[in-house]
Image (cartoon, helix red, strand yellow):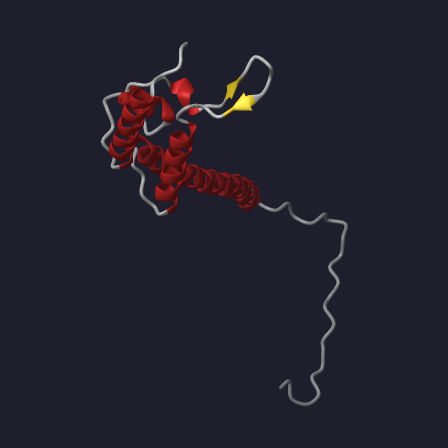
Length: 168
């Protein structure tokens, strides 16, 4: 690709600055984002002009519009740090991430509650089963009469106790 004239470079830089201002104000084209790719498309220049170039001898030189790309990134970072998000999709992504984190916390809390209630249910059911068994055992004892004591056994009279003094 051949070199461009100074007037073309000046015109391109003006177009880049105008596109930069529009993007940073939030005036994004349909399907565009607030990034270097959209900046290049809006300004009508190639995106490679924002990145460093490597010569044939291996030396690295600055791209023709790299200083403008760096300025764009600096201004975009400053806006984000100030709490302004020029790209509505980025704001939506941040909102959805926060909402997702909140929902994950709620699901974890509900899972813990469900686990506690499941353990409580198991304990309550086992206690009810044990109580039922005890009631059934006591009913069976109540319904069947006690067998009379064997005839050969003699009953021993109880010893009389004498109370001395008051029982208070």
